[in-house]
Length: 476
Image: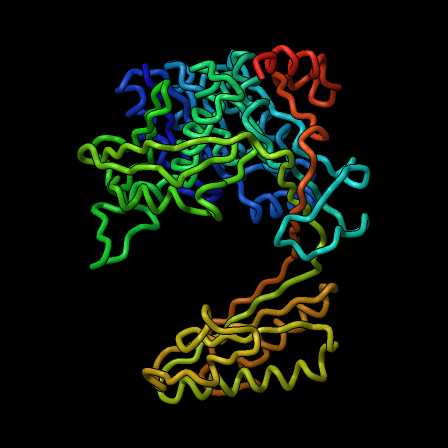
């Protein structure tokens, strides 16, 4: 029998009602199934560590209380395992919240498992680290270091499932591992069956970004039209024991699943289709075939696998000082020239009101912004469609000290009365920055394991963690 993988979310901030239609469809189909919430990117992991640094009780996915309650009871009652990397920087805190949500849903008896081992900040200096091939940043000083998290594979998640967990909470794992793990557990695939591992990993890769494979992020009116995008159905991937993959979505939902949508997602973030590196397997897509079988049903076949890499990617987060942003609008006659004058005034003011180390960027939204460089080359060259239109000046500034980025936004605020005519709608904010760098750590130096969560023993040392791993991985 095949196994169903449902996507409940594809990133932090995703639609919080998307999983309801997916779970209803999983129940309707009546096959073994799992639901995964993929909510963690490098940007969101950095933000989680920043939040935890400010409040130790935070640091996990802020939308857990929106994502889980609508589907938690139905999933547990129908044997649909939930997996999520919504633990982010604080998996223990996430587990405690999930426990409360389960009690509120009338299922205090559920088993919650936490995956440990991705956080290596306490051992960072003693490990054999090599920079990722594109990384130019040196390892930060201890004073600046915030976190270091390894991209774990699926093995510890399979351990969690072997503990009969109803919900598995992780921190940093490779996104597709959330989907590969229930396949490994259900089909009892061997950890050196590279072709099946590759199929399972790519099934997860197709689902990990939520609606991207079923019409979201695909739509381009007149070129790639997508029906009913407001109710786009999140993907359900059906995987057979031999590795055959069928990409579908809930019946009656919006969006579409076609060869085009699947091909776009299949190649998403894949730097080398013949050697796509993941923690559990190196995937070869060079002979993959994508074929439409019916309405919103696409088959993917021909995926092959190679032995897993010897090193695992590690994201290091460190203090990046402060950043500020502020904006002001100019509209109507001669609006563009007023916006340009406002930018010149700000540059002059900051030249003698702020230190030379203050880095700034000026954009004129409506003329040139997204494609412009930090020095504003396109703004100088762009020919405006309407000099009397609607333009918004944006200032961004960064500096190690908060007071100087605050000074920059205050200078833009002062344009209300000390700048060109007709400025309005000022918005300003400043926040700490977290920078990230990527390194590779030896697989043997990573000690990941799973343990059932117990509120009373959150801080207790792991019991027989290596014994558990040895038993679970005996088939390696």
